[in-house]
Image (cartoon, rainbow, N blue to C red; front, side):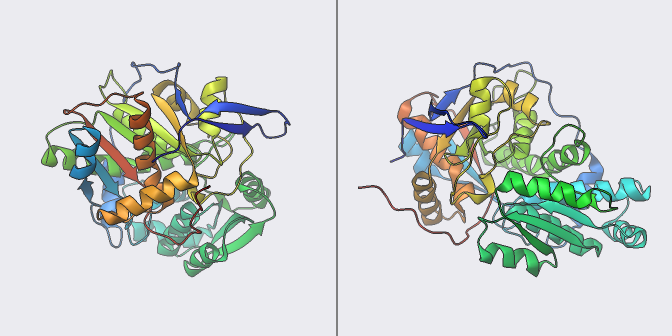
Length: 386
């Protein structure tokens, strides 16, 4: 059963510890958000041209739907996207591609090969930081373009993950600190150099590439819309998206929750890094202290400034799950034919928690979409407290 109750959070740089509920219904929710702009056809063309391009499956879980009294529960399985075990390359590829086109003066209608030749001629190299899948996605895109990538990673990243980054041809630099510290290191690396900083989080003075990254995730929404129509002929009643810095969640909010949509978006975070829930609670972006979690890709302490306005106005509720919740959901999904890692399983843990506490009533007509953002990976199985 999912954990329920309260958890503790500490703001970065402060000693006071705050106790918060692990489900926070957002008082700032609006139902008048604008829908995202029309999807760029060049984006779809680029992704269709990528090596190993294919539509990822939308898997129905009828047993879970019956257990919870819901009409339909679907999982979007992103365990194999362009040959990588995560959705991140959708945003990374478009962000890198657009940055290269801007630097070389090319239109975004050019092919990946044309962009690569121009990038090589211009001597373009990439710098980013990562807590896992993002860095691998940037590295793979750099490999396709034939250019170099340098990746800064926090000291908490295990050696197996570092090795996967190196296998893509990237230079990996380990930072003696957290994910937020690795952001600072990546920024410092590009100061006074011609290297291109490619991040999925934003701050004052750095916003364009993260916007392109969010745009890149639209390919998945196009797929889900089509797959839902084929499966049940309905739009989702509820979408649950995981949060790191918030770029992916922003994409879900802007696609599904705008223009008085009947779709609600719930976000899920690790108890080790509840930056969005705490920001929603306070009413502004706050950085939180993070700790170790099996949900590595969600272990971020600060919400992206680009994402905050959409999340503040468009998220129905924020849910916190712990490592045991996530692991139990990994086991359930794998037993039911879904290849999911801890971040990918977190939305299921959030759905169970919502159902147990009865804070989001769903009936036999409801359609729930859980976005499983990563496939299986090795991790230390958490131990249930006696």
